[in-house]
Image (cartoon, rainbow, N blue to C red; front, side, top):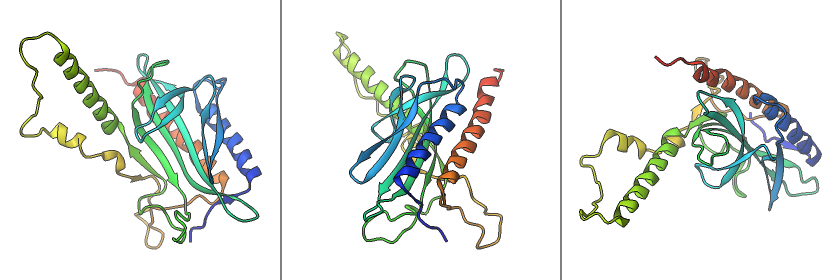
Amino acid sequence: MSRTLEVTSRDLDQHIVETSRILLDATDDRRRRARLEAETVGDAIVTGLVGVDSESIERIVGGRANVIAFLPLQGRLVAWLSYRENWKIRAGRGRNREFRSASLSVYFGLENEAYKPQVFRAEWAGWAKWNAQAAASFQTDAGHPHWQFDAIDSLGEDSSVLRRQTLEVLRDSDDEEPVREFDPSPETVRDLVLAQGLSRVHFPSAAAWWRPAPHNGHAFAPESTMELRSWLSHTLRYLKAELGTLRNRRRA
């Protein structure tokens, strides 16, 4: 049976310090001047990266986030990381912090350039009370933790913006031939795929479906901050190994 993960303010502060160390130790340069920092908004505590060696980018789900360089890929391309945790301040005398979610996002881009498409993310939402009336539960029936893949959505949106900007430039030119909207008919498979919003699909990363019930679930909640840090550490180690195959891949 899942239970909510609650910690004291002091324990959360220590967890943030140790999580910062895990993130920096995983990068290609441990001397980077960056860290996790907590911001309190109402009864929510949200952590994010800050520091002179971080860069600000636009997130696919809205808002901005700071990223740090994770791993050089082919050419000048670099894999970048952002990390975010969300906790809720509980009411009452103890005012413990209740875990809501953790999200590790990966972006590809060049150093000191704002354009860094979001490629995929690993997320873990906890067992919590998501509104005042409901009992504790997982936020969705999806896998916890899980992967979500954003490259199709982020690159698709970018290409739409680029097409619109190109069209506006042509309209503003002195060409005698009027510019007409390009409306393919029938729709191409590419357009149909881009319209699906595949980043909303959750792919479980801890699904023991081969086991007999009741041990064949795909939704698990962290029971301690140590488990959260262990998940993050192993996820980073796995990503470094897998993304390393892109860097070492030889072109045919």
